Image: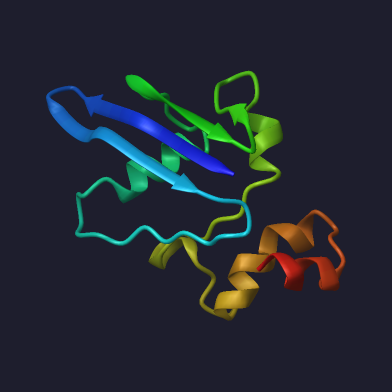
Length: 114
């Protein structure tokens, strides 16, 4: 479902990611955990197409994540960010289900996917 192959990203002299490879199969859940500055947010920005890798490739559901495809792919992705991006009045499930509810998904479908 998600294929990240040898992805690298630099911001000036800062090497944020170096040759990262990660594959998450359909139906699996992945979690990015690491120290501050370890590249978690950069990797998420690459996956969602907010930034473009300097090298390597990213694919979601068999489609390359690139400017021409990223908008349609984002509608098929689910992710939850940490701290400031979470709504404190919602549960973990509520935060994870927020976009699916916004898109009009049936509650049964949301429960099956989260």
